[in-house]
Length: 169
Image 1 (tube, one colour):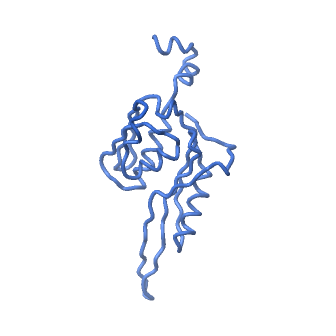
Image 2 (cartoon, helix red, strand yellow; image 1 turned 180 degrees about the horizontal axis):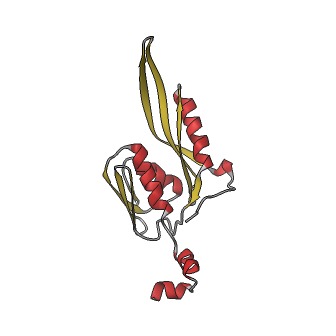
Image 3 (cartoon, rainbow, N blue to C red; image 1 turned 120 degrees about the vertical axis):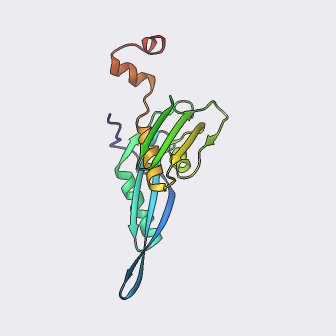
């Protein structure tokens, strides 16, 4: 399943910082600090990308993360502010469960899932994370779950049938 996006207006993408990690390396001359930043970019209309930037300063790490995120954008089906169906995914020690919600429910998600779902443009969803709450793995599990989503039109095309057959069987 390939839902990568090639050409997108870079000006429309908004970046959100998920987490910053300070890494310390001890050498004989003392301690060296570097920063790792997880950044999510999205247009709020179904396009999202995630990137990791590492640098000696926070701002440089964030900008490197934004550039990395813009290089691997994917398209997610968003229907009426929610997702088309339930989806679970696992990455490393993190497990994620995404459940579509009715209008007005809001974005019920915690931790590193919230900025990912906000960036993609989802307004109503129930999300649960199990296992590790490590932001790296949680973001990647959320992206994996979103990437597996398919809307009814895509299912009908893959099966070679009409939309009525998809819904009525």
